[in-house]
Picture 1 (cartoon, helix red, strand yellow):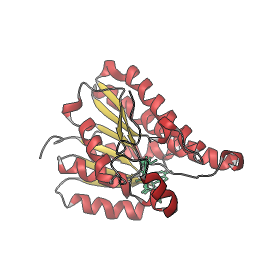
Picture 2: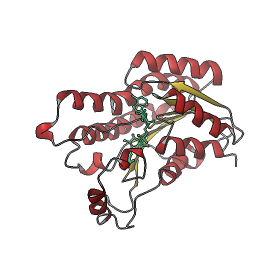
Picture 3: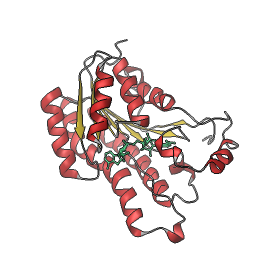
Length: 249
Ligand code: NAP
């Protein structure tokens, strides 16, 4: 398959989970893949696995919350790959707790990675896309950013912020043929949700019409659509991949 032949994708938090599934989905369509993650060892291993599909890969250690680090990674990516056509802001963490007990450092940490991280990547890569007069930015938000979730004030605020940032950039960058969209997953089976206690997971399942957690590949399929030429006329949207847990009008 060659929908993304000659395209270069920069994916953050791509060493595992949803980011890794996105890397595979885009590589299967012929894109060269930059696997950027805070964990270089795992990123290198994932890059090798993706490379076996016959595409060029590059593993980079990047802490998305650090603008200097992001700038260095993007410089290296452009040196090796020549350009960046697709940016997938996927790196994200949780640090849950009821708001009344939430520590300021847990608020700051989650916002710095989940929201400022997206700012840092967009700030560094969008000028390159503006010069190219083409590009697609896809930000991984969350259902929680749309509906809230007890115990996740920091995470919900960060993801609601990602949605607002995506819509604003979609308006600002449209004249340069750059699209910006978000994907809002529901509950997906990854290391992030493995941490959730079993009884809470069972309760969550009762609220999902499709009756099961999603797979990273389910999210990757939506990202692939937004990254492909089929979505050239789609910008400023939030695609929900949540088994029907939230149905927007
Ligand atoms: P995951 O399995 O924990 O993978 C996230 C990756 O990002 C990990 O490799 C992690 O490394 C890395 N990372 C953490 N901090 C980073 C930083 N500062 N800079 C760069 N990379 C960093 O998580 P996931 O479930 O695949 O989630 C991916 C995205 O989907 C996140 O934005 C998440 O909020 C969103 N999402 C997930 C779900 C879900 O149910 N899983 C639902 C909605 C939205 P370490 O493990 O070493 O920290």
